[in-house]
Length: 155
Image (cartoon, rainbow, N blue to C red; front, side, top):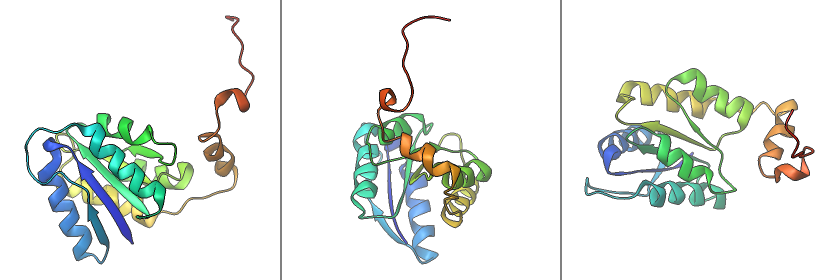
């Protein structure tokens, strides 16, 4: 499988470790940077992962920053990306099974290498369940006013 990976400066070491492990396990890894710990802006790298996956140049993506929060928000700004911030394998598996997530995000300051590998393994091994979940995933790409009535009245 081809996997895109990127981080900010806070997660460069974890990114390198994860990229090496993914390569060792037979995956093709597109390391989208950065390559040193000089300060960078996580939105730039989150968007690189999102664009790479949305274009189909990689099947799935991994986005890393200090907490995972900022880069997950950045990835999700792209309409072709569905990124889930995960911290343990069950949430990683459910992100794929129920939400058809195509990118996962983790925080290098919060998630160690062993847990990151466990999350990625669960993410890669789980397939989207489809069925009732497909309708919900489809709504993620549809403006809300087209899916549910909007009212300005307060209950």
